[in-house]
Image (cartoon, rainbow, N blue to C red; front, side, top):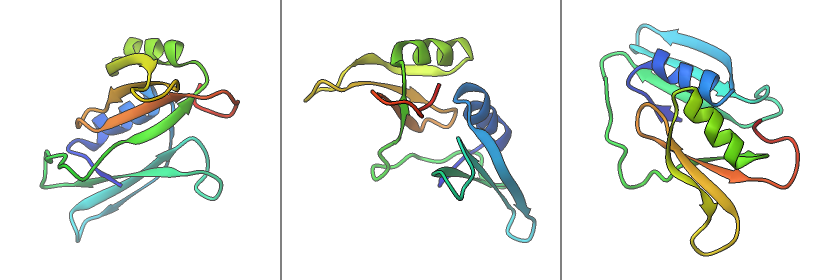
Length: 127
């Protein structure tokens, strides 16, 4: 779950830039928050990200306990180029990880959360 300061901005990022689908969204007026679930497949078959928008909170401190979410991609260079073209922010260009040979990159969502991209050798990852 990620707390977001502007739900519509975050939904645009996760659906338009990262290509996820909005799976469901529900408002809780008595609690003054909205939950939106995004992912690459149905919740019964895939991992999804829960975006929580608290109506009275416009920004959050990331904190030092959060690391990042990670997504596998088929071609990291073309994925980063596509993300940049769609207005996404690549904060670490593709290259080998510090202590290994896996090719990774990092992008940042509109609230400053990091998303690691990992180049995968198999199919079924983000296109």
